[in-house]
Length: 389
Image 1 (cartoon, rainbow, N blue to C red):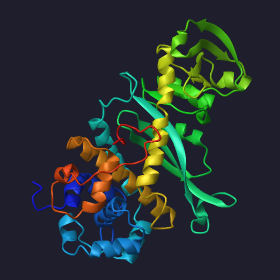
Image 2: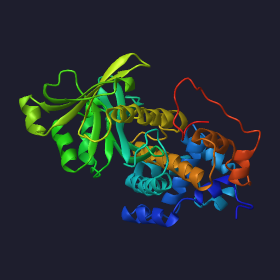
Image 3: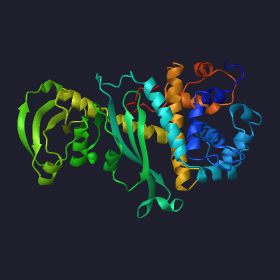
Image 4: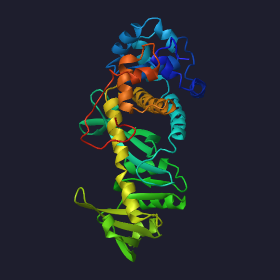
């Protein structure tokens, strides 16, 4: 029943509170806490994300203005700038990482049959990393260049639904390829990544785990052609070869055969050379899989534009990681609500409606179907189905 409940209460009712409590207990999050629990902190931060609050003082002013409504949405502790700042600095960020992982698992199950542009039964992942810039004078611990600061978001997304299944937050100078050390390859799955992830020892470990990869070959890669396979040039595939690496170190690290595909992108008038350990899929399908890799790049662009992970409410590493993980939780929560309530509108539109209606007492579906809510955004680039309008 949604009668008498605010939209914020309806939204948070989709959160598994018992699982959150387990995460808090795991890291003693509420130890010696008499008021303003981890749950209070967590609810304040999604409010800030959804309503685009600029600062802790802004969060305090807006929430206090809601008066008794806060109790009914689950915020029992007194909201103040100093209390929230202390919580973000000191409550273990791993609480929110673990809780985001629980939400991600639920979202993946909901979007398991979602199409993504290539007709395959296999699970397909896209791996990439993006730097979140930070002001070096405010975040001196985040230096990665002489005059620049930042942290790096390593992300693996499931292309069915564009749900992040793995995220790691590191210093910005950490090489992208290290993400392959943290991911446990899934047998039969396909991992699509750019050539920054080419490390033949790591790729061979993926092959030994019976997982597949698709990447771009480096221009200076030394190899020997073993076979050339027939190609249908009407699909823009120019060559399909079975090769062996000839560089001493590369051949030692990857002693088995590889597949090298040369492809012409007619839209952009460019040639691409792909490298994969999958010998069964058609060459054109391999090219289409790599084309879908841009979805992870769009994921980064989308969350940076529509969630608060460029301006931070705290300056400590713990506060930054807490805010990023809660932002990811908000993204996944809205995706879950969208699927469970069978909402046809995009995440963008849903977020825009929520930003102005969180404390209205009306069913979420009614708010989203209101004829006055109409939002448009630049269509000059391709959009993911989940993000489209």
